[in-house]
Length: 228
Image 1 (cartoon, rainbow, N blue to C red):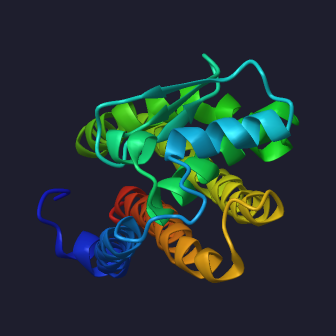
Image 2 (cartoon, one colour):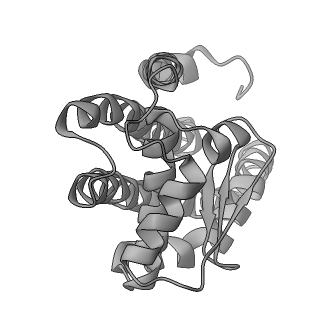
């Protein structure tokens, strides 16, 4: 009943369409911004290092990672990992994405509470992502409500993670744009291009959050609705 269920697509399809649109916007904005070199001439790696220096953050390493748009900040190992296009590139796309990831490093250095909360949710969210569906499906078909509810509880942690992640990502983007402007790395007209890239990326997180919430709603309807 969970497979190819019309109810699932009825509930989640708006989020799926939003996610597809957001992915298109990211690729489009990134492609446009990647063709515009920054006037500062800084690469993504150079931008990241300048910002870290400006904030006195000395314990974060910067290294390339061989993954397209796989840029991320690893708070456990204090490493900023940038894709080759961002690490070596000097486009506005590279500068903006690098600054966004440095925003997370600064959040970490300044003990930004939502980031700490999000990081604390990671282990349970990972378990929930991997095992919640299994518990729900087994509990549903074996009529073991307790097991299904345990699966719902685990998936609820995934939803909570996505919700908490939104302010973390939006804050990193707003920090990035402010830092770039304050340090003279980009100009006001360049900021408009950077904003398009970061705002498009932010929509992917919004889409992921809405998808998680609607998926949880579907699970709840299936577990409890079919038992009435």
